[in-house]
Image (cartoon, rainbow, N blue to C red; front, side, top):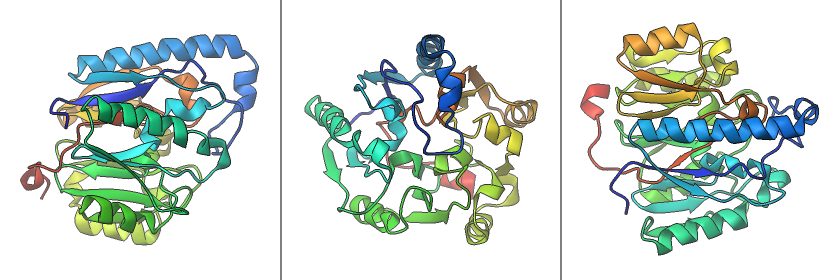
Length: 292
């Protein structure tokens, strides 16, 4: 099992925006200048890798595969905790082809000793990785989105595999098709989230579990900047170029922002978190006292 903060990226060599399975995806914008867009995507990827390195993360980079442009979003590939990886099952056929190459990538990580176990979900159980199942280190449980992509029963499958509580939250819009688009736990115990993305039942659950001082409400502008889709390590936050609102709010709370232009990936509905997958997450002692 990995002991140092380590994050997985997938090279965007085969990345493009050629289909649409969420409201953000814009194949027409990509088609207007595919070479220029791809060049910009490669540059944005390198800027993200550098920003992650500056926060102290070790970066592992895997190769993508032809015809599978969304492999560049490995957050959707698996849920990883305590050296164990539970591989995703994708709802849309456009992404199901990723399952086999990601299984090879995770198998290679296991052979190198970076993971201890790689497992599969039950057949017919849709669960799209850490994009829809986010570990909250301080509270010692997962938050799991369901509705647009992952099924409600996936929360039980994840809980059974990892032996941890999973708090299921229903996503109410196609715009927030994965939990990571609209929800981000931070190291200080705060949750950055976009309230309109959730059902009333999910909002009641969140408000019952989180005191107001730890709830940071994102605006529609924050959401459209993909600023909620952020990577956090200690007091460092890597995100797309953000809004004055979030820049001020997170700075006031002591976070140092590393902003990266990820416009080419936003055309496919992704930001910094979507493009990464933490491999070292542990269920060891967290910040529960600070989060209470």
